[in-house]
Length: 298
Image (cartoon, rainbow, N blue to C red; front, top):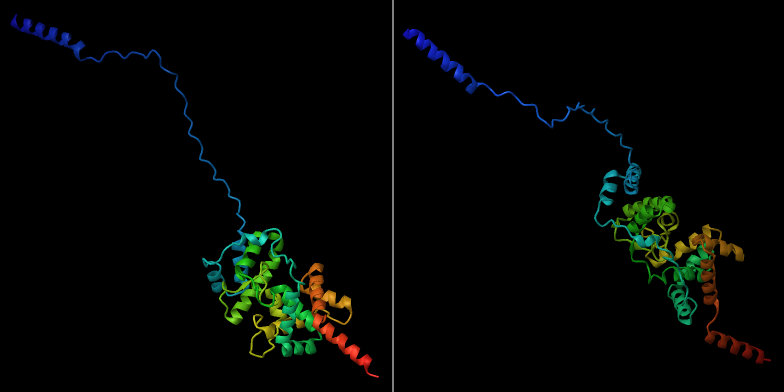
């Protein structure tokens, strides 16, 4: 009997404990969203980059490195002194305005230049058959007999023309090659040589290619130096002689036009040269007095 009662009590305890430990039935969420099919996107195909055209600077350095010493080119064109001068593309820059060209002071300055260099300019006239007054006139118009040589770095000027003016890129490249050759030959500091807004150099203002072709070593010191009056005078005369200077007026005009492609420039040079040939008022007076005396002699 005791066993039966014990069994009964045990069974009752077990059945009473089952609800306590059983997990409650899961309730379906009232606002559950329908399941979404997630699709893993395919990896994107990398875009093919179009080749980037090299910059004008890079192209210049690469091209120069093929014809000149590569290490020298890299050194020059990575120098912090290399700068763009945007004024080289400004309208009206570099034009000559002869506002004081034919004043008495200007004419007397030209005559003084001829007197001071009488032997040098006389030799050039005899050697190249070019009028001394025209030689002097070109040097007056170009730099006022060496007083206005230009204040721009020739290298930076030519580099700026190449970078900023695509229409003149071929010109600038040829002049850069010629200038680098001159700098190597004469041991110039590449950035110290000063010139015009077109990269012209010296008293007669030769661009580098003309410097290489037409500069004359008149004093026989082993170098054609366009900052030296003797070399400058003979270089101007030689340039005009090579470009067809002759006795006829049309030959003279064409030769001066070859020097600077402007008919206005030609007129300025020849007008000044003609003014230098004219005697001064004192000379006129002396000639008149001489004529009177000759006529008075029976």
